[in-house]
Amino acid sequence: MQIFEKDSNIFKLLSEAISEGIVVVNDKQKIVASNGAASEMFGYDENELVGLSLNLLIPREYHGSHGHHFNTFIEGSEKRQMGHGRNLYGLKKNGKKFPVEAGLNPFHLYGNTYVMALVIDITERKKSQEQLSHWFQIFNESLNEIYVFDAQTLKFINVNYGAQSNIGYNLQELKTITPLDIKPTFTETSFRKMLEPLINGKLKKLDLESIHQRKDGTTYPVEIHLQLSSIGDHQVFVAIILDITERKSYTANLEKTVAERTLQLEEALAKEKELSELKTKFLSLVSHEFKTPLSSILTSTTLLGKYTTSEQQEKRDKHLTTIKSKVKYLDNILNDFLSVERLESGKVNYRKSVFPLSKVVNEVVYDSNMLLKEGQTILYPHDIDDINLNFDEKILELVLSNLVHNAIKYSPEGTQIDIQVSANNNNLVLKIVDQGIGIPKEEQKHIFDRYFRAGNALLTQGTGIGLNIAKRHLENLGGNITFKSLQDKGTTFEVILPLEQHN
Image 1 (cartoon, rainbow, N blue to C red):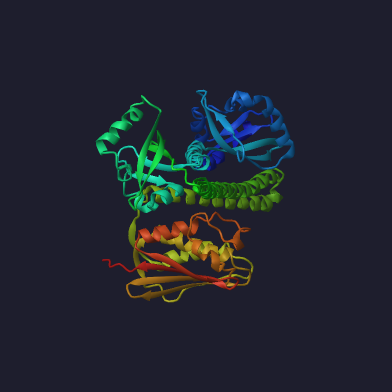
Image 2 (image 1 turned 90 degrees about the vertical axis):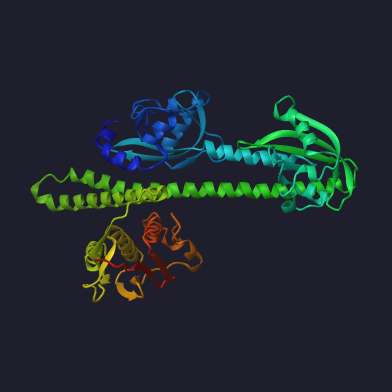
C-alpha cells in the first residue's frame, strides 16, 4: 500500500481520467488503490475502499469459490476479461447487488504482485437485453398473430408477419391506424371501456371473441388474448390473436413467421454482442497505451537507483529523459480524452487572435524534429513570413502537431515530410505530405471516426483520437480537413482555414 501512496499522484492523474472503475488489490486480496469512479460505483466515499478486503465488493454467495479463482488467476498471471457469457455481480456498500464486467490485469511492482480490475457497471445494458428478450419471447414462443399498440393513442407499434398476411395490411399501413379500423363491431368508446380493467389493474388479462375485418373488406372470427405490457416506461397492449376459422395453412405460416422473427432477433443480439466486443477492444487498447509507458517509467526509476556516483550522471540523465518523455506521452493521451469530453459537452472555449502563421509552424517543426527517425527530414514551407491568421492559435498548433507527428510515426526512415502552404479564394490551405504506409482504401471512410485505427497501424502506438479531435475543432471554427492516400505510397492531409479579415 505504501508503494501506491508513493506514486499516488501518477495513479490519480491516470485513473481519474477514466470513467470506468479501477480497483487494485494485492496478493492478499486487500484493496491498495482505487479511483473515484470505483468509489462512486460501489457507494463508498473517496479513498474509503483502500485497505478493505475485496470480498466486500463481491456478493456473499460467490465468496466460497472466489478465493480459489483469485489464487489460480495470480499463478497464471494472464490478463482476463470477466463477465462475458455468464453473470458477474458487484456488491454496493448498501448491500445492493448489480451486474458488472471486469477486465483483470496482473502486474508486478517493486517485487510485489498486484491485480488491476477495470470494472464496468452494465446495469443499463442488462435492462436493454431484458427488453430485447421480452420481444424475443413474444415473437418466438407464440404461434399466433401478434399486435402491439400504444395504450394511449391506440396506434399500432408493431405487428408480426402472420398478422400482416392475414389482415392484408403491411406494417407501414398498420402504423397509421388503430384496432378500431379492423374491428367493425367496436366504437372508440366501447373499446376504451373494455380496456379499463387492464389499465386500472383489476384484470391482468382479457380474453374475448370478436370479428376482424381485412383490408379487402372480408371478415373472420378471432379469439383475442389481450394484456398490458411496457417497452421501457411506455405502456403498450399486446394482443395475441387466434384465427378460429382454422385455415389449414395457418400453423405453417405462423411457424415460418416465428422463424423469421427469431432470425431477426438473433441478428440483433449478435449486433449487441459485436458492439460490446468493440468497447472491450477499445478498453484493452487504452490499457495497453498506459501500460507500455508506465513500464518504461518503472524500469528507468529502478535503474536510477543503481547509478549513485557522479561519473554515472550521463546514465541518470538518460533515464530521466525517458521518464519525462513517457510522462509527457501519458499527459498527451489524457489531454486527448479531456478534449473529447469537452467537445461532447460543448464546453470548448475558443480564443481567436491575430498571429503569424510562421510562429505556429516553427513551434510544430521544432517539437517534431525531436521525434524524427533516422534520415527523416521536414521540408519547411516557403514564403509564409507575411501570412497572418485570425484563428485559435492553440487549436491550429494542436492540429498541425497531430498531422506532422502522425506523418513521422507512420513513415519509414530516410523519408521526407513536406509542409506546404497556399491560398485558395478566401481560404488558406496547409498540406502535410508524407511517404508513409498510407491508409487502406476500404478503411479510409472511417479515418476520422473516434478510436478508429487502420489495420496496418495497429502495431504502432496510438489511440485513434487525434484526427477526430482535429476535425471537430476545425469544423467548429469554420475550417475543414480532408485527405488523399495510397497504401504503401503515402498520405496527404489538407487543412483548410478561413482567411478572416482583421484590423
